[in-house]
Each structure stands twice: as structure tokens, then as C-alpha cells.
Length: 138
Image (cartoon, rainbow, N blue to C red):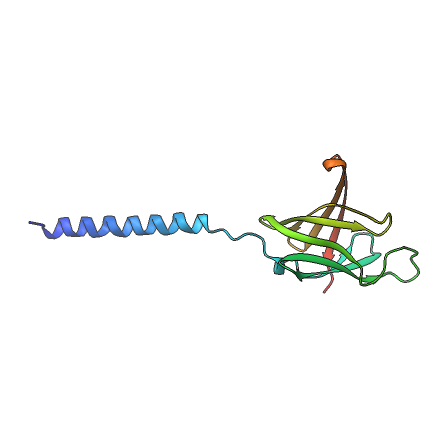
């Protein structure tokens, strides 16, 4: 026969177990970086170009939307320079980066920290990499 105190202990134990399960589940359900976290227009650290990032075909793409007037470059407005960028972790993506200056496509990575986006293009299996910083310019 259960006493009132035994029933309270069982009830308290079940409540504690439910709370621990909820806390454990919350820790395991951290959401990966979403495309809309980086969506929008970004100004490159040189001040010479802007790229607009938006979802495209299940990934994230970046298209040139502005070039500083008077700058001579083979880059063209409307040119896709980041493509197939897919989440690799919290606020991180990997895919491809096109460099209009040399006409080559590189392995690309991006990471977002607040209102700063860092992009990186690498060649030779990641031995040679070049990074750029971008700030929101919506």
C-alpha cells in the first residue's frame, strides 16, 4: 500500500526526470545555420562590391549586385560568385566561390559572426586560401 509520502516522491521523481529529459533534448536540438541568417546584401571590406545572398535550389548563392563606379574589373553585376553554399555547422557554410578576377572557381567557405560575414576561397586542397570580410548593407 502506497502512502501519501511515497506517492509524492514518485510524482517528484517523474517531474524531475521529465525536466532533465527536456533539458537534454533542448541541448540536442540546436538548429544548424539557416540560409536566412545570411540572406541580404553585404559590402566587401574593400568597399568595391556588394553581394546579395539568397536561397537557391536547396543551398545559398551570392550574386554581385553593385560595383563601385570607376573600378575596372572583369566582374559583372548579376554574376553569381558564391554558389551551392550549404550549412556545415552553426553560422557556417561550404560550397564554391567564383573569382571574376581570374575566372576560376575555388572551394569556398563562409562564417557569420553578428553583422560580419567572412568568406574564404581555397585552392590546392586548402593549402592556399584568401579571405574577405563583409558587412551588412541592406
